[in-house]
Structures are given as structure tokens and as C-alpha cells.
Image 1 (cartoon, rainbow, N blue to C red):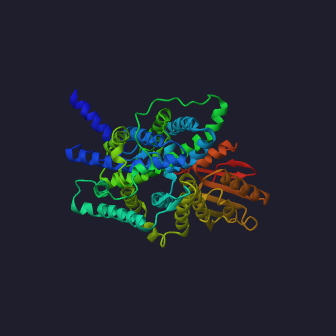
Image 2: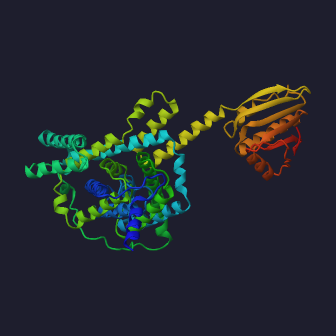
Image 3: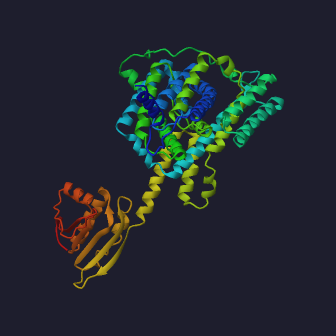
Length: 535
């Protein structure tokens, strides 16, 4: 029984997406995964505490969320090696809810948020992430890199005499910058010497040792808040179970669920490009939902995938579920037993790690390709980046997708044109090329000479597609104009989808013998509103 059990565990730790090469859990691989998890856990601590402050809740609420969400998604998520936890994108939405109604309503909202995400996974809504164009992805990673960078700048501030936050200056600023640069230099140079230890972990350990041994007066993790605590307790949110409560929490839950899934699925794709894996979108939705549902019942603020920590894990060599699981468990160990030690880590070391994440996350090639790609794609990259920084990720992705869709529709609307021929019997043939849809109906109508055409006009859609109801309406308008001019029009080689549309509209369709087999298969005529077969 022992061998099947080990095989099952190994499969659980490495499974989760298609095209993933099987991973052998050799001692070297296990060491790499555990050290990657330790590095990620160290980076999670200040992030979780900071996001808890943003949301207006106790630091342990953020730390518990990082532990629970990270553990559940590592176990059953759609992409091994991806890291989830408390995030700033969700925290900024939670501020007003906590301020107006209290933390118990936040827990109830997180539970509902998780249920909505589970439903999104069950109904396979995650597949729609494929509609996000590549320029939107570039804008997303660039904007998120800038957001991560800006989030680190708060570590360069201290409380002034009046309690307000002021920038460091003089020797404290020089010391902070020196430690940050030292950490970044170690992360950059360590792989050139050895890959036995993840470079980010080496950077944190060496700089922390220097600060502690020499007693350097530099801001430390403990200056943010104490991370000491116990195991999270099961806790049913103390809110009235009625319609009024639902009307309060549902809008927040819906927004949080959408933001969480968008950020998670985009991170899923980004990590998939690094690890050459695909699939897992619906599984990730369910995993995020289950993680947030559990978190809400254990006093956590909820969370989603974290691109920064995921990139730290990738850079440290983490490729399986073991790295994510160990990161969550290390974080729990910090909370329960190692808080005095972790609180001595200088913030500069963690800032240095995150600055290296920013450098690795930002799509620097986008600055080069923006000179050669279409202007519309360049504008989408810039706009999505700006909206991500100044508004939020969900709005940025929605704006980017809408603009990309409108540009695509406009370009296709301009593709509609026709080649004309005159048959021996005097009939005129219009061979339509390009899609016929709401954006191209006006151009389609302008192709025809209703007054100058002969008595018989044939409109051939072999190289076109009738896409929507607007296109169907344009065909009917075409027929009515030729009918008003006392002329006969035949429509040939319309696709099966148009066939169905016309049948639903109550029209009579007769199949032709020469219908092609690849979907443009109907040949019919329109005369005085009646459709019939013929050539």
C-alpha cells in the first residue's frame, strides 16, 4: 500500500494542467521546492500585513488569508507553482465595506465571493480569459509591475513628529538604499556562483545577517506589526442572515470575485508561458472559490493569485505544488513559532527582492515592439498599463478587451467589398468578400447600384459570412430595395448559421444541390419577401 500512496501524493503535487512534463521528486528537486517555498513565505509576510492595513483589519487577518488561500490553491489550483494570498487589488475594494459595516461583514462577503468563484468554475467561465488579447496581457504585466514597485515605496517612509508619514532622508535613506541595492546585487550575482540556494533567499539571508550581526539601525518587519498568533479558529460570520445583509455584501462579493478571478487567470496564463503549460482555468476558478470560502470561515480577508510572489517562486526554481504548499506551511510556522526571528528581517531585503521581481515582471520588449505593432495595439498597451496603475486591474482588463474588440470590429467592417461580373444572359453577379455584421452593414449596402443594375441580380456569399441579426436585416433590406425597383435578386451560398437565422425569422429556405460541405451551404432567392431555391 505504501507505493500507491507515494505515487498518489507525487501525482497530486505535480498535476494540474496539460502539457506539463512529469517531475521527479529527487532530493535535489525537493530541496529546491522547499527553499523556494521558504523564500516566498518570507516575501508574503510584509505584503499580507500591508494589505491588511489597507483594508483596515488586524494584520493576522491578512496573514491567515495568505496561509489558507495559499495552501488550498497550491493543493488543487490550476497551475502548479503559482502562489496565491492576500492582495492589494482586493484590499482596496474592502476598505469601504469594513469602514461602514465592520469586519464580520467582510468575512461574510469573502464566503459569498468564494461561492461565486466556485460557480464560475463549475460553469467554465474561466475559458473566456482566452478573449484577452496579447496587448492587454502586456499592459497587465507592465501595470502590475509598476503597482508592485509603488507598493514598495511605502517602506521608504516613517512616521513624522505629527504622526504623518514622511520620506526618509539623510543617513537613514542612504542606509535603506544601500541595503536594497546589496540585496539586488546578491540576487543578480548568486546564480553565477551557485544555484544550490535560491538567489532571493540568499539575498534575504545575507542582508539580514549583516543587519543583525552589526546591529544596523534599519526598519524591520517587526516595525510594521507583530506577526505572532495562533491557529486560525473556525468562525461563522456574525451577521444577520436576511435579505438586507445580502444586499450589502453581494455587490462587494461580485466585484471581489471578478477582480480575483481576472488577476488569477491572467497570472495563470503568465506562469503557463514560463512553464510551457496550458489549461486549468476552470480548475483555478474552483480552487480560488474554495480557498476564499474556507478563508471567510476562518477569519481571513480573502485573496487571489499574486504575480509578484509567483515570479519569486519561478525565479527560485519552484515548479510543483510542493513549493506553494511549503510556502503556506512556512508562513504558518512563522505565525506560531518563529515570529521573533522573522520580525528581525530588514524590510530593505524584502524590498530588494520585490524590486528584482519588478524588473523581471515588466515586459521590457513591449517598449521595443510598440514602434512596429499597429497603433491601436500600442494604445491598448499604454491604456491598460495606466488604468491598472491608477484604477484597478479588473477595470483595466475590461477596458482593454472592449477597445480591442472595437478595433477588431472596425477593421473587419472595412473589409467588406465585392467583385462584379455580368453573365451572358445579362444577370449581374456580386461576389461578396469579408464578414457581414453590424459594423459592415452600411458598407454592404453601398456596394449595390439598385437603379442601374439589370433585372436579375445574384449576390454570392461564398467568400463571406453572415454573422448576426444586423446582417440578416441588411439582407432583407437589400431584397426589399430591389423588389421596390421591380427587380429580382438571388442570394447564394449562405452559411448554415444564416440558414438557421432565416428559418427562425419565418422565411422559407430551400437547399441547393451544389451546396459546399464546409458551412456555407444554402442557395436561395428573395422575391417580394419569399425565399426559394434557384440559380
